[in-house]
View 1 (spheres, rainbow, N blue to C red):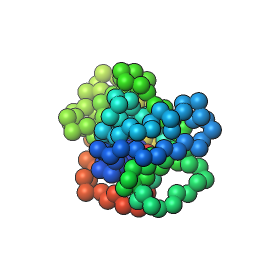
View 2: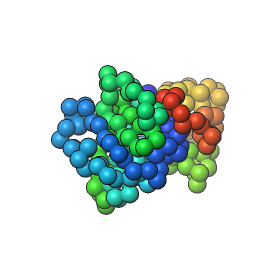
View 3: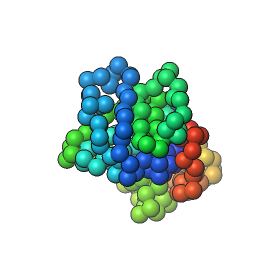
View 4: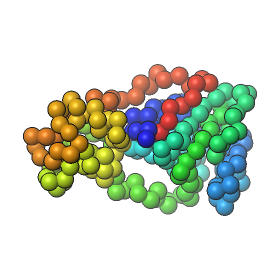
Amino acid sequence: MPEGQVSHRNALRLGAALAGRRLVAVEAPEPRLAAQRLPDRLAGDAVAAVEAVGKHHLIRLESGRTLHSHLGMGGRWMLRPAEAPLRRAGLWLALRTDAHVAAQYGGPRLRLYEPGVPVPGLAALGPDLLDPEVSPGAAMAARLAASDPARAVGDAIVDQRVVAGIGNVVKSEALSSAGSTPGGPSAPSTRPPPPSSARRPRESSPTGSAPAARS
């Protein structure tokens, strides 16, 4: 499953391309989205910002709405110039501005929330290790210290309620660096160091025709 650092990189790229721009067209060909009437509800709206929280994408709109996306095991966002053709197979959503089109392929979660309606589940997440206000090592240590010490450390660090954004790849790297195993207890002697891949995504990531990474 794609992990938090990929969501943050996507948010940087999508935000650089879309923020401050009005949506000139919206497509939502996935039948499971039909009841949400996304093209009608998003018509004429503008993107205010794009954020990531753990593995979640949040597209904040000028109207106060929030478009929430979680791509699960196999979804991804693609960013293309406005004039570039889109692959239709697997297309869930396309957000077009005068300069770019951002397209989500696959799911499983994509929902538009009206102003003031909280996105379910976000409040229960642990600290996001890529939040600039969070110290990854300190956050990890504090959250594991508060968890059941008999719990397997590999299970604890991928629990999004403990810390947000870690998946199996980062888990394996962190535990290997710590000389620990996934089945070891969440005890102080076995707690991993901050994941080496929990680095801030580079602001200079391109916004051209290359696909946004999966998350």
